[in-house]
Image 1 (cartoon, rainbow, N blue to C red):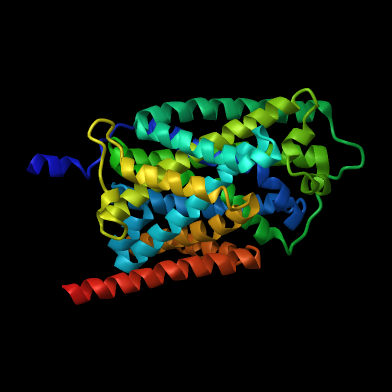
Image 2: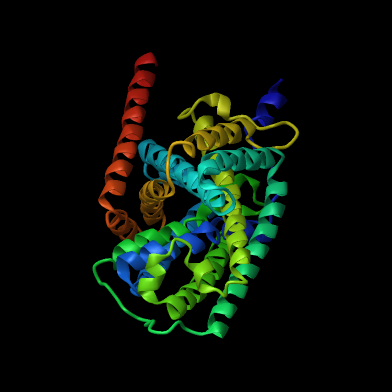
Length: 409
């Protein structure tokens, strides 16, 4: 009996450094690279290159802080665990809440992106829901299978992006396009929007209980994945600005498909859908692990904190996340999902940097904390208001739950 209890809430360490890097790449090099540059150009013109640099700097600080924390606390949950251990129970809970609700919105955004590229407009919500349920079923079969599929998706996406960048430069610049024009006012907002495309690197940390030798593997995997992603993003951004100019880039919903020669456009559209699938697969994986960790600690229903005896995954948490996202895509749109997700995830990383500051005070966690706060409040006003309201609801629920627990004890 005791053995049965012991194995129901522990995950097996199956992933190596390569698998962890691929999961990080699959989380970052996804739909964001196909959709984020256009709104960033609308906000900042060619200043989006500066926004990209700012987003990358904040992401680096967050990645470094997350890697340090993950090496010390190699368990599922990411900043939910770090905030709890370093700052207190409430901050850990708030980080976990921000991650779960923000990444559920990201899951919805990725599913809707897939549907936008492969389905007629009227069918898109239903196709998005079907995609979510299919990938949830894949994750249910085990994290090793998910890592294999993610590896294939990343390879296809990188091949499509490389072909697109080469084809853009070979075909030459459109007449009348300028490579650099700029708006100071929108640079920070563009950085906040582009941060959405970077925000997958710490997904590796949420798999802390499933990574072999986490103290060594996680600090290596996160910066490798981030560095590779930045190289890809810089190449794509320069190619788009070279071909379309800032004004042209800002005017298209699908700028990469518009920038390549017409014969390559269907391949780019297919690549965008595949990339969104890769992001969605890794997102569901990460959200379910944080849900699992919060349920194990009693902040979510404890029934979610069980591990499948055969597949070794938190199957109930995965099913719960999949069902919620499948319902959400029926009632939201892509822009709303992205804006809310960015605010919630920046809050999550702000807590990560504050936690890292208690380990080793220095420039990196301080800069990361300030950067997250500045970018979060540079987002469009409605994103800030809705995001703050949802976080406040989570905080209120925690206070009510804590008072009831104290009263009962």
